[in-house]
Length: 350
Image 1 (spheres, rainbow, N blue to C red):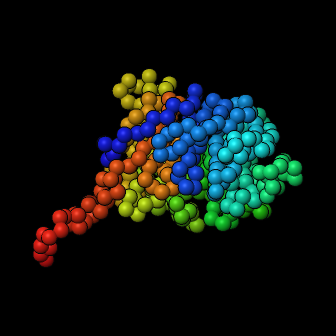
Image 2 (cartoon, one colour; image 1 turned 45 degrees about the vertical axis):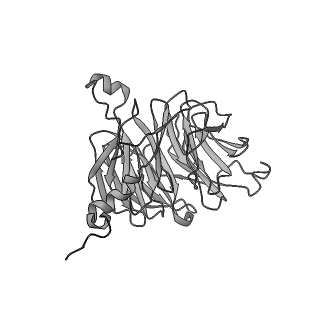
Image 3 (cartoon, one colour; image 1 turned 90 degrees about the vertical axis):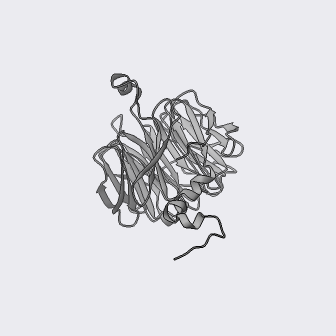
């Protein structure tokens, strides 16, 4: 699968990538890393558009709002920062008492969340902030205090997402659980023991009806968002850092990535850090193929919302943008219905 895909190699960061995110249209790719400078690229050709300068520590997380006007980043400098996407201007900094590990805009741009690291005596905390409707013009009137703080996890929160219509917040954590919270009352609505190891990434399917999780236990799992029932499991032979879902019904795939960190690689075999991205069939759970390329573990992956490409960010400091070839879109149909793709004019005898 994807043997002929030629990735676009983007060397934009001095240090390991921590998170990458396509905007809603799939034409921009935002990347953050352990260097202090969030960046944005044209997703079709990997050309550098610009940077967002201001953080003084590793940047752990990034989100962009629905219409690509606002960017939110969270950093080891104990701040979450809000930026104007187009100008690169910092609009507001929200001080925290520890590193910010996750950020996410609510639909409608009237609120956002952050997740606080549980170091330096802090509990892992989700904070919900109201967002001033005039924030792009001026930070005046923007409250720097959260509307509500939510606690309950027993380990670091790695991702936190608003569900459909902002009716709940879904989080994953080092404590191996996925949990659902009421963003108004802060009450925990649901908790599942999701994996046997740390749950390091969760991403929605395009319509937000499914969630995929990636864990250090080597598996990715597909969940029903409403019930948190585990629907599918994708097993690998390596610790995973990220998993992402194709939005196309003619390409029903999930892609996962991870790998041994540098320390473990040198002590096992020089041959394999298991650094390729693996494709699975979403429904049948079969492993279909893999894409090599990174020289260190894959730390973060995201499928473009249009489903025609995906990007991965590695410990090696590179972002790789993969545009799928035409075969990718017809392989599923060919496997299920080979006759359909035969040359017209042949008799279809029954």
